[in-house]
Structure formats: structure tokens, C-alpha cells
Length: 116
Image 1 (cartoon, helix red, strand yellow):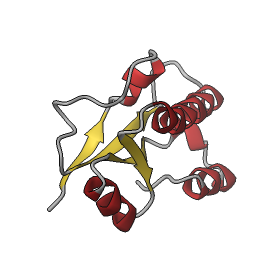
Image 2 (tube, helix red, strand yellow):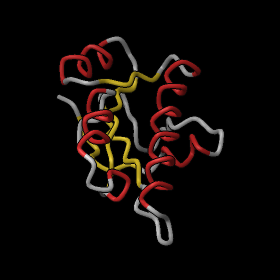
Image 3 (cartoon, rainbow, N blue to C red):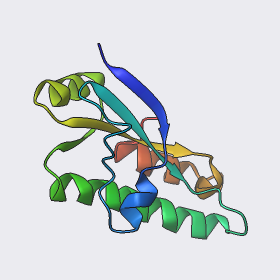
Image 4 (cartoon, rainbow, N blue to C red):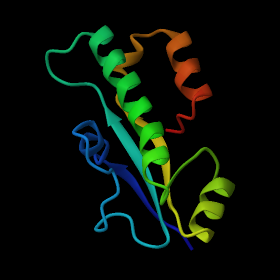
């Protein structure tokens, strides 16, 4: 059985140079949706897009820097990561301000692993 946290703001830790892994929210059989929150007050859609791209890059960098983390695209990948003793994460987005109604932006992030 996987325990799923569908909303985690730990990506902000990564943006500060810290590991997104936090023992309190990523136990042994835990799947984490890493919510990239970009609908921040005062930001233009372009600024939100740039922040989303930076967060997306940070999630990828985290998996290279911290071998206990696995950025997954499917439930099968998540189960395999947990079975291997890793912390399974999905790239998620909170709000759609960064997309600015542009289908190509949505297609880009989905192709890069966005799952919710």
C-alpha cells in the first residue's frame, strides 16, 4: 500500500538549496505530489511560467543530488521506487496562472512529467 500526499510545498525547500525530502512527510511507503505553486500575488503569467520552469528543473536536480529521491511519471515507477527504498515523487502544479491559457505550455510540462 502507498500513502499518498497530494499536496506538498517542499519544493520551496529545494528552491532555497535544501533537500525536498522531509522525514515528516515522506515515510517508507509514501508517494509525494510535489506541488509547484506559481499563482503568487503580483506575478505576471510570464513570471509564474519562469518560476514553474525553475521549480521543474530543481526537482530534476534534486533526484541527481539525492539518490534516495525518485521523480516518477507512473504508478508503476512509483511502486518500483518505493520497492527500491526510494522516496517517490510526482511533479505537480497548483493553479494554472503560469500556463497563461497557452496549450503549448501545458503540453511542454506534461511531456516533462507533470501529472496533476
